[in-house]
Image (cartoon, rainbow, N blue to C red; front, side, top):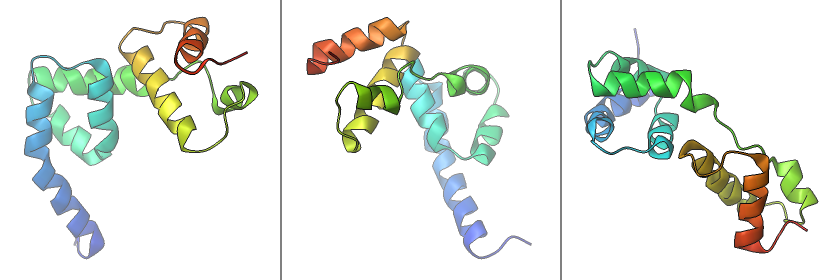
Length: 124
């Protein structure tokens, strides 16, 4: 009974699954790249990929049980307090902090602040 835009969306998802599966099967796939790939996938696509055995299933499980919940310690409010102007820069900074957290380069709020100081000369 699926038709119209929902059917079109589902068909698009299904066409993209083989490429996504190949990317998830890759030997070296960092946590931030895995999160990026699966954040963009629909819940239905994640479920279909989870049904694949082996490495793909383990990676989807890792995403669902751990990686999807990782967040930087700093928030947009912190960035504003540090003197950053709200806008697209916030998203780039937050993405940078998230990648650092996911890949294990940033383990604390203090390390996130130190990275901001190094990259932007802030916070003061």
